[in-house]
Amino acid sequence: MIRHMGSMPTETNPLSKSQWAAIDKRVRKVDEDRWISSRYAPAAERQALTALYALAYELARVRLAVTEETLGLIRYQWWRDALAELEAGKPSREHDVCLAIAEESGAGRLKLGALQKLVDAYEAAFVAQDRSREPEAWLALTAASVLTSHHDWAEEIRDVAPAYAALRRSETKAFGPHVKPVPKSIRPAVAHYRLRKHYSEKGEPNAVTKRLTILKAIRTGQV
Image (cartoon, rainbow, N blue to C red; front, top):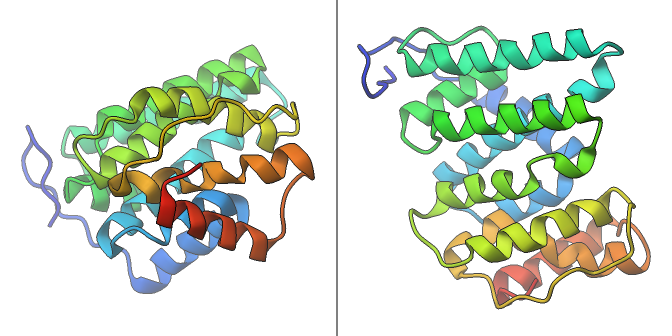
């Protein structure tokens, strides 16, 4: 049973191991950088990060899946309504990512209000046809909140996240800001920012380089 604050308890069957594995595999395929970083989170929090990044993928790919703005807006509204239903204590819609979010929000690891802001921001970027407006910083801040309730690296996330995203999209070769070390508690949410060096110099690194680079960031906090 998953309980939602401010609502009557709603029966929701947890996802099976194979269902979670399928979502995890999807995130690994489409967002390997964040996926590698998330491997260093404790098991429960790692699962919440997987659900979060799976939702981010669903929202980000709308721009690739539709050819008309109206169709895109319908998709964003679908997610907005799905999250609102969970917040109202209603059963989850039969979508694996929605079910994953229901499970993780019910356990208190994901905040539905934060996810609604994610939907709004991706929709705004979609309407503007401007990927620089995609909520990279909010996604990272939400990921960090899964790992700890307090840290002193919020401003650094707001500075580094857009620089990392622009490099990853090959829109710039600028490394971006140099920042103080990442607090240990939130490193699994942002360790992939260390890949900026590779993206700025030679483009996307291979899988081994990604893993070694992110491991160093996990150990040192230097991104």
